[in-house]
Image 1 (cartoon, protein in one colour):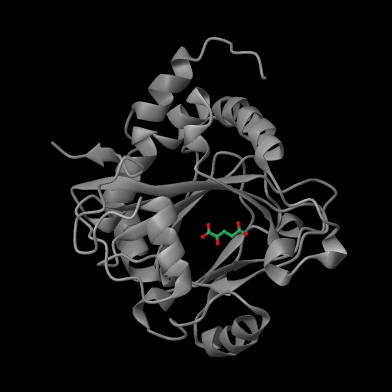
Image 2 (cartoon, protein in one colour; image 1 turned 60 degrees about the vertical axis):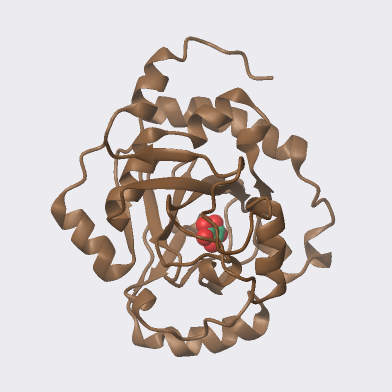
Length: 276
Ligand SMILES: O=C(O)CCC(=O)C(=O)O
């Protein structure tokens, strides 16, 4: 395991507020995403990133060759709820700085964790097709948000996350799971929205809303595109009847099957930030 050095400065950095401007909040509510620079220091991201990477490769079960994988499998290695595996990863995932930004962008009093997931796009990894995340989640309102945290500089050739601006306002393709067909349909339907695709430097992160369409290109570099993400939801959000098989699976796996109609307050979904 990565040797533990003095983490104290990092713990403070993870907890203390990041000043979010009124312009940033307006931008997020209009466009459905925002990119923020210098949210964490490079040393913090390198330190936690090394531990996350070690655990991604320990826990990953997708080992078949790229040419035998589905489009979804080619997109990335996906390892979820790593906060339950390692104390340092839990510290990172439970960062109050990030959870507070999530609450302020959505304009809610507090947020719970839905789940975390590492998304490692390997060298020669394929596209992440266009999709909106909330298709997969049995939740009662739209106050859901994902933070996407690259663990290295991410130039265009590595497949940074890209967003169809303001697409969260329009209900198109909301019954579509990720597939080659949805990619073809959505690539056409989303032409009406400007696409924002720019590199990320280390320390820059994005937040996108549950109904904002997003995608990522292939990784043409020789290095893995290492990314950690956390999904937050309004702390008062409720669980609704799962309307597709993915939502049914998510309800059992990430919401601990709390009764339909109740607040999503299982032991898997702690409150990570609450104002006051
Ligand atoms: O990292 C990627 O390629 C996709 C990320 C994504 O879809 C998400 O975080 O919601």
